[in-house]
View (cartoon, one colour):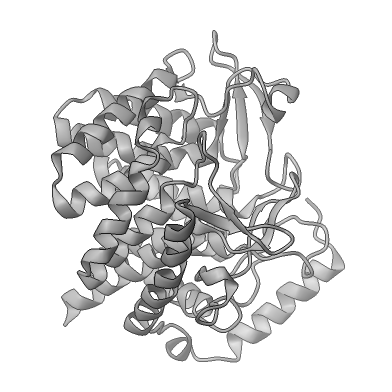
Length: 402
């Protein structure tokens, strides 16, 4: 899409800003300091959650706490997952207790076949819990969630269906078998289950989904469409659309982050060089994008019409930073410098909340879905989750270097 004068001006200013500072001075996030702050801030959020006996998700447009839905909410696993990471960091039993308590609230959702986000929900919560404790009940919950998830796989298409289209706003789009780039993140649960159970059925579904997505979801410049709609019988592409981006042919920022994270994790489990190459190409596309602001916290969509006056998306930046830290361990290219730069800026006053503010979420300035007029310039529980994950990944790398 054509870049406007304002977007060109923003790019020029970003180049000036980047060139005016030393790279060494701008790529050193305070890992311990920020993890300690995250523990303090999330302790305050935990008190709110315990008082309400609900899982915090975000803040409403009028400034009130918004909790996850009772029926099913794709974000419900992130707050318990954050608690697991803080338990891993601090060894404080209160985080283990909190994570176990709040993930229990949605344990029954493991048997709901209507949602593709079971990987997000259960791997981020029960998956981290099983990794840290070896709890056999957590393992069984993960297996049952995975068994439910693979019922959404269609071998004609080679993908797990994202949304059902018989009701809600999805039913109004004319889709038959929609698959969103976000769905790459649900594959981690399946890969893990094949390792845990030694049953290859989960891995086979994950690989098929990754391969089909690689083939159909990306443009020549390695930017990603949000939604690919397939014919469920022939497997042919019917539509290439967006749901949360600015336009069908635009570049929704969080979608690009899901892509680089998704193919990095696929390489982790398979060591397939095609996945590593894809992750590297997406990373290069993101890092070198002409409409990336100087602090590398992206606008919610790279083609949004009012850049540089569009909302930023800290969640996309946190996801990208976490992915790049892992990608750096596999690649002969340097992605760690970029990840540290993003984390340093997320940890600045511009994005990191002050203690006791921001309704006790960690990061400010994320975007859920502007086309749905939902969660615009607010904190989001998954932004906090991936921010802490990125800090933990970086801490492990630096601890090994000591």
